[in-house]
Length: 215
Image 1 (tube, one colour):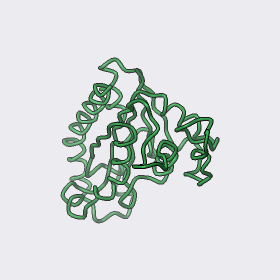
Image 2 (cartoon, rainbow, N blue to C red):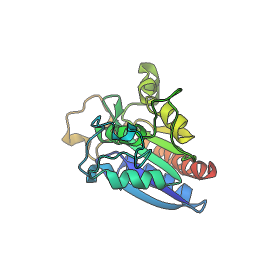
Image 3 (cartoon, rainbow, N blue to C red):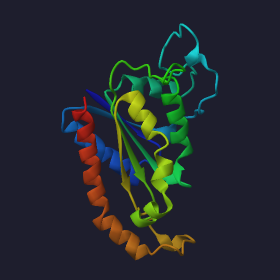
Image 4 (spheres, rainbow, N blue to C red):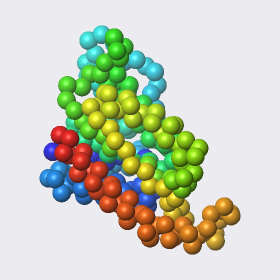
């Protein structure tokens, strides 16, 4: 059984990547083989609206036919038994790289038929890990999750299952004194990182284990 982690952050060893690694450890504890791919390592586009995936007698149903650097990643994703996606939140949404990946992942699976049915004949459980600089209360106050749910409903419908976790008030800089960021209290940020982030890592571990249990 294989679970694939897709890192939509430009950083390979910070909050999002660490949580993804914990999710993979949780999946591995249930016997899964794991792999991580970093989207910022690849040059690719979002959907180019070629509609090759919608033609009659499509040669590879459910797979994006535009062959750029993302193509082998999409092939791996569609052959995996579970997926765990991770992205920091930039301007109230996932990164542009993650958004482009999601377009290319989901659109070929969606059909223009009654009820917009999906093409998959098996379940591929998906987990989504969001990391964000804002605290939980602010996230709820301004309705961040309303915007972030944009893909989760489609992922659940097309891939059979989707759930998410959020890591709030993350530590953005190692040394806040180097940056103009007067709205943040460095000491408080580091305290949250020491106390809450380990809990978030535990949640990510449990998420990975649950995804494998969905199979």
